[in-house]
Length: 472
Image (cartoon, rainbow, N blue to C red; front, side, top):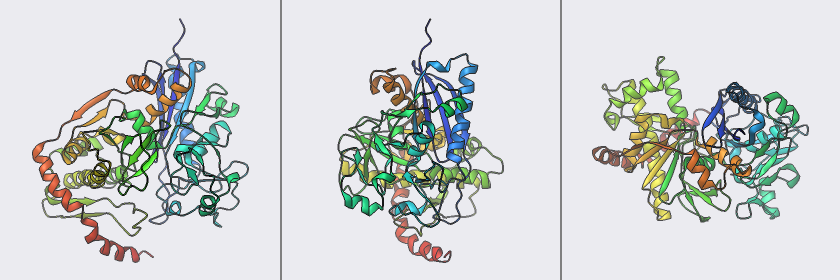
């Protein structure tokens, strides 16, 4: 009997690298996960991945996944393809020999908010690429990247799905065509696994490595949140809210339009929460006294909605348009304990998302009637119920939280003709888990709190700007 075929989904985020191997029947048969090292943050608006940590973490996750795969009695020759999804909005500077000219610049670094510049700290730079371009290059040796992960200061034509032909765009970005990689569309081949990497990982040489899109678009595909009126909330280090669409909306006021993981479709995404779930881990590590997030969730569940007047403002990482902003907790009194603070952090995330999502839904004339939540934060039942109560609509999570890995598997499987269509693949790979229904009394209470949170910056900005000036 011929063994069924398999595909690999590679999901590399800010805090971890994950490699999942899926069977053609849609089951996860092996996986590996490697926590990444903490970002180096020498100042509030600088952040880099130490050394070559993205690549090292990827290799470690691969080794664990492949070891589990072979230990289960499977043959790596039956793996048909892999696809990669890597955190977006990062910059990678390479020397001519392919080595890093500078540690990978993370999406929270203020240098990404300016045109590409070869500053003296970088030294000799041959190529400028994204995180997905870098990992693809290390796997295949090819200078090829996805056209759908070029967000920010890149001379990209989102309608043509290729580099711009306008010289002014290149000049504005301070880039030349010979400094950037060639581009392919999501679902197309980047290259084949090199002999050296294949030997290191125990995988077949030449195994096709397939492009996807930026991480949030891949999550949207892998979560099954593709229908009108369905939104996706991605609970990661950067928490994003988005919805699929068929139109490239130009000059929207409350959201951006990005390429979707399916070529020819688009993703509408509003502003999110920077260092969102990072702040949850930060609180656990600094003040949890050894408690797990599950234990903290249990404590928070006993606290009334609204945390008895405690409000958390999530500006742990300031946005580019207001680099002086800092996080805040307002409303402390003698009632408050660890559980109140923890719940307030979760509520602050949900309230800030609603402040951004409501204008997007209004501008699109497409209100949300259902939300799907992906990422590790979806494991928290308290967080899921808070999101449902704040948004006032049902909120669901999938059995497998790694939606980006599923999106990668869809692309790899379609390339290798394991599945015939995105719909068939999603039907096999995506299974809904619990749905959390809003509680009317809680929704009413959060609506009052949301009105306060929505205007918080007009009061806090003068204070945080003055505080920020002290750091200079």
